[in-house]
Image (cartoon, rainbow, N blue to C red; front, side, top):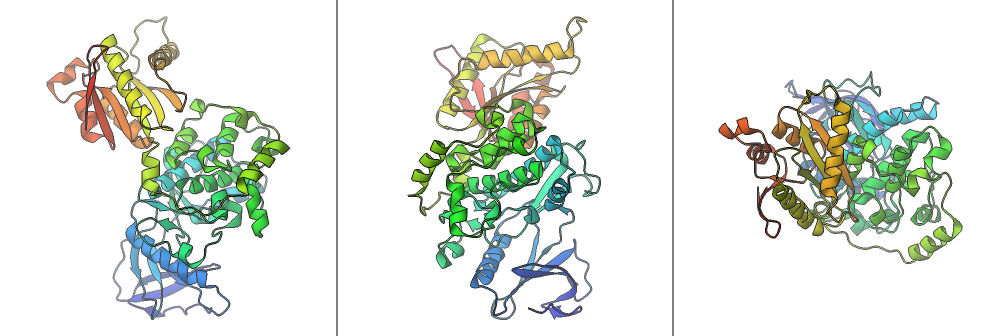
Length: 492
């Protein structure tokens, strides 16, 4: 397909330079032909339609047109316009400034390895973007480094990326939705071709047998990118045959630390959990993955993180037998899947709280976790900075004491089916600290007492629970203290 000449007019847009020549489409800079100033830079994507190009080009382009108009948010380009397939198909969207993720991978392959902190920050940004997509009942299905733009939240400048930046400084924008699944539209790719669709190096095992619409497929792809960032290698290579692709239904990659011994065990634990052959053994949602990447000190390191060699023959044999019967099956709504495994925050007061209040909180959390197998629990308390006047009690000692208090409070809960972490936040504004934590960590439910958690002065204005209920980005359960035999709660 020949490129459109500079200055060509298409439905009120004027073609400028060709910025990308891909395998399935050409991308041009465009401006409004009538001289109007656009609110942001724009590009036009035009599918390849030569005799040598496959039908999946047009099917994928139709999918992307539908999805770009249906979805919204800061993690995908803003939609502007689309062209009719009967005349000239095209898609005009925002031109996102930033660096593709493969620029960091190229540095790692060149011997300039990314630090664990930088890898975690980049991975958390991608996981956050994927979770935002899943909440809208869409699954990307083709996440790879060239489809991820990384920019900074503050000024968009990525030229000075370094590990001093926090994970919250990064924002990921996802591109190329031609292979995506959107639950509210017919799955055109599944209808047209019931076969593995995606990029072989990054494709999840279930995609190999035609399963589409599972958010954990995107988690697997993020795991491949994390592995590549950490080692400069692809965990499964880039197979181009069905037999080569099916191997990931039972095979494990070499542990990242065999390539790079300096990697911490917590990072290997995260990467290998993402790459589990069975979706049920991966992170249950991209939000859970982002949580671990932003709280490495809370990662529970097990056999995955400590492993220095691949799994044995008999493990692979059992997986191979199980995978032999793997075949296509429909997926439930992505948003419904992730709603079933939320991140739950419980705000535990560390002073002025009776045993009755603590018991009521424990009972409410137990009920919430009991109906949500796989949910994650974050136990949080908030202390004022420099709250101790005792010279013998350092801030470190206070922090340790608060962590011990949280673990002691949680001891009465059955947490065997739930990942649990403990966090001490420092702030003079308890409500603001809880709301910020919930927003940054994709919390779905906050459980807290209906009392003021000891901040007596706030009784004259809005109490802490009231302010949390007003501003939290999620459901808030306010628990009333009662006797150990009876407890009640109200929902926001």
